[in-house]
Image (cartoon, rainbow, N blue to C red; front, side, top):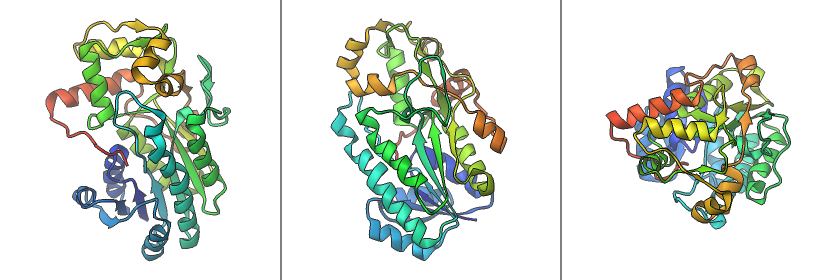
Length: 318
């Protein structure tokens, strides 16, 4: 099949494109700059310059390329340690306006499947209770654009699949590298009592899930899938393990109000809330099993990769 990937130069795109090519697919990658075009070409993909926020250009690209499947991985995650809500404005535009542009282009081009990356924290946090694909969506203002993005995909005439990821981990991710540095310095604390659950996913497992979805359109079309590790664990357990692994001091615990002062209210209210995601649906539908089934395997691989190699972290995840 011909697979058209948007957001191809980001962390997940760099993991997914080699897998798609290895599975025998023809891949065309959309990128915004000459540097990103070169990066995707080095992976063996064809490249095309464009921007998801350029609706007319996107429509022309899909009309010319006529792909069978479109995979949208476009994001603009802020590369800052303390994040202000305004830092998310471009990501929100990509989520809402960009996805609307892409859906219209897919419909006009007769695309048979649209695979849309989303996030597990689009759902309401549920403490120690499991979150599945039918759990209630969040009403937090920060997530308004993500909720709208999912609504757009579900309402599309082009069959869509929503892929809700756990916290994405990869040795070449800026955010993963910053977390490791903070652990080594003892500046990544446990918030409150650390009982909030963390669902993670290694970038390679997320890429594997996307390939399974692309290869099984008769099963996956119209579905929403949680893609995460098999055993989400409390943050206190995860952070303590990671700190020991990278040679950092024992993590400190801080009250939520102090964490908000250091990292911003959005980070604590949403990104550090409790998400115990279940991946039962994708395991049953597509025989998916993560190669990194718990935080232990994920953190061990990432720490080893960074210890043995110098990775250039992504400066733009989309």
